[in-house]
Image 1 (cartoon, helix red, strand yellow):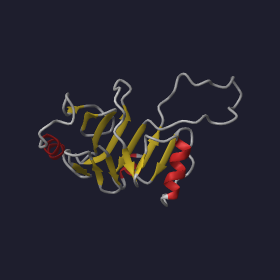
Image 2 (cartoon, one colour):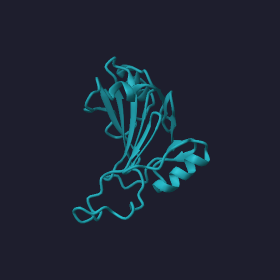
Image 3 (cartoon, rainbow, N blue to C red):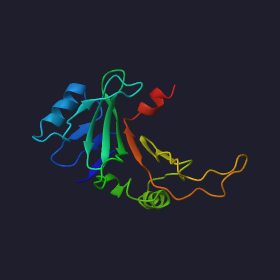
Length: 176
């Protein structure tokens, strides 16, 4: 059960679920998800709110919340995956160049991506961006904060909790 991110194209969900291409309408996305006997989750596909989107849908996969977002034209422009802390099952792997983006510590993930020829920079403040891909860690309220006026000596090891893949041009379009 693996999710494959397809940069510039969309996402391939685990079988028997479909591949979702950027540019789908809400009706097309719902039709593709509903056309596979079992719904993606016991709750099925639900409407949700995402600021700046004309429509957004969400559903659950093992260990993950999945959100689909549309642009002003009503076309799928982003797919987001967040770890679901209330789901005890291991998170479904989210693959990019054959690497599970949620399954590695951030520094090892960066090394693995670079070994695959993906030119990524070091994660800055828990974020990593590469073209339409964005990874971030969830805020950890348990982390020790340095005393006021002092900088931490180094960033503690962490993994990512959120992955999003955007259609080409989607990030620049909404950055204005």
